[in-house]
Image 1 (cartoon, protein in one colour):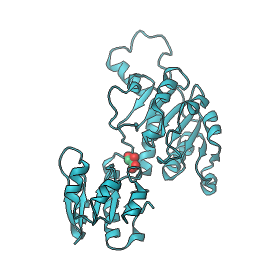
Image 2: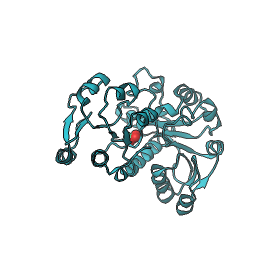
Image 3: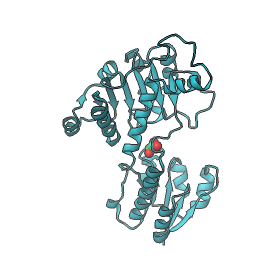
Image 4: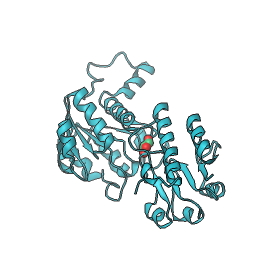
Length: 319
Ligand code: DGY
């Protein structure tokens, strides 16, 4: 039996599945595993299951038996894919099982930022409900406004479906390539990046982190958005210049934002963004429901077993 090392605890049914197919070792300390600890524990492992651990040349050079790294996430920007190719290590991920859950949270952020849900919660809790003039609590409508989605993958489609069917929104999108079948089935309009920024009431970022998307939401991009617009980031923190976002929110260049991801995670409490009222912040919980995280863990387990069994075409391989 091949050894598989998991850098995190796994749901019981996933653990049972793995124990039937491989020799399983699990990092069950409360602290996140360090690269040194990973090398030590995974030295004779053929497979690793992880979610955010950086997989790079230095690590791979010390794990010559390794054949597969399976991430329990759809994003795999923590993989150095070039180094993995060089070392003959296959990377797998978990697309498809988290789309609806991430789309739900995207709408939660859109609604919370537009209707000032977090600010108003604080108003009630701190006894400020009385004595304010009419209208101080007004927010913005979401329904029947224009939504611009940057990155039209499966999650983008799930967000677009909610926007069209549930909220009667017009939906624009920008993507590396056009998706005519999605345009036709959901009634979406493909536009350039600049057009999307200029025309949307809500700009939602759903792109993976790549060399092209790194820092794409910068001062110039925020400057093109409507001053009444709301920005939501569900992709990766590195796609956004946080200083530019801070200035745009502080100076009224855009109205509000909701972000699930930060450049540094966990973001330090000194991050200036946290001092603003017009941003809703979450600790990277896009896929974080019990049911979805269980499905992701099982898919990650099945991926690594498929690769180690030589059934690579049954696994969700990233390259
Ligand atoms: C992913 O799967 O990449 C998500 O960011 C997890 O929430």
